[in-house]
Image 1: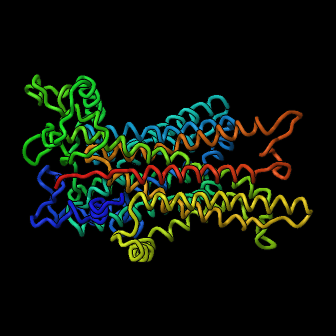
Image 2 (image 1 turned 90 degrees about the horizontal axis):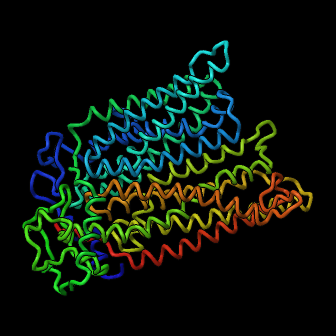
Image 3 (image 1 turned 90 degrees about the vertical axis):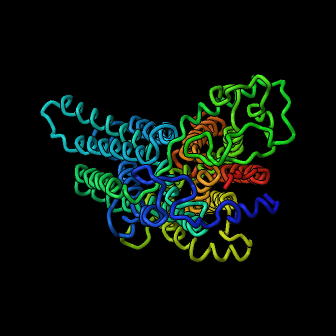
Length: 578
């Protein structure tokens, strides 16, 4: 990424000159299918459907409502399943883990439908509706009147709640990968001023997500615990309904990208065509490779992509041979340069996405943070005991403060240091987030070391407020890292694969959680030994070495950072044609 051409692409000096005409230059259309007007569609007017509810303006919809409803369910779900439905701790934990896994796994399905057939707007509408029906079923499960026969009373509750949870998971699969992508679609990246505004959108999007989390983890959880689960689920259900209505009400303001057909099929065509020509020599002059004439791409909704060096094996798919005739009707033998570059881009992005697996284990350590806090002095004042789980609010507040200040304070300051107009590129931003992830786990380890020493010395217990830095550092890591991944997935993905690439960045949360779970099981087995010894993480943390586990996780984050730097240093950015 060090050469001048790539630096200019990062700064937006190529491919994003202001368009003189009245229409957008990125191929977007309006609700009627006509070229999208630069004046009457898109930009922040359209993005209010995603963010305006945070600012309290025209209507409440989109991501804040979705985030509020999701976190209203997930934050306190264990209490509902155990206290209301009478499930055991193990059963409830298993059901919650399955639900959270499904929420992320279904993003691949939602992204595939959005990029290939439905388009992002239709996918969001269908997904929001599905999610809303799931919330309605959850609300009904909470208000089903008790029956004299217990078995008859619990069956409809369990059936309604199970169906509701899986409908919400299915709905979130279309919302999560498409909402940030659809929001970014509202800015024309061929226009310098709009491209700059799009870069601000990613921060406000993440602000909206965490705004929903903050309200859900404070107000909604209090309502659930003190006013009943019917009202506790009913309020976020109402927000979800408003989100659907509001999203549909602003259709005339949106810019739409046409779906480009199945990306999976196009990738398979390139692979098959390349292997069919395994003995064909690729011409040294890339202009001899096959591409559609004119400015239009063969892929609907996608601009042409310039040929790049590397992964030359796949260039065989675009190499014209004497037997290639009627190429447009034989895509399994001859593919365009743009189609080949789609595969190359995805292959180059994949290692960056994979580094997100380890990165996401930092937040997955929160249950261990809570257990650590449970062994500390949680009395902030003489008459007030701070629940250990409530310290996650430090992470949320950090994000709510840092996300908007990044644009106005940090980005200009960093821009003066780096000479890059936008302050940090997507890859730089991810790297900074990983540095803070290392610091967060190191801080947790240092606090645990100090706590164990106080126990050994029979000194007063360490205050739980010493955990605040590790929660804050995770928040900083998320503002840089998570938003960086969102921006990277949109900016570097092919036009017709943006939702799919967004889903790839999201789904890395699932293997990150699975990895942490596997590590805990293995370490407990290896360090536990026999005779009932609990190993590093026993029931009584005073008898264990949780600090060693945190140091191990910090080392793993550091190794992941080094691997990311190596991947980023060799990464080739996409070069779309103007």
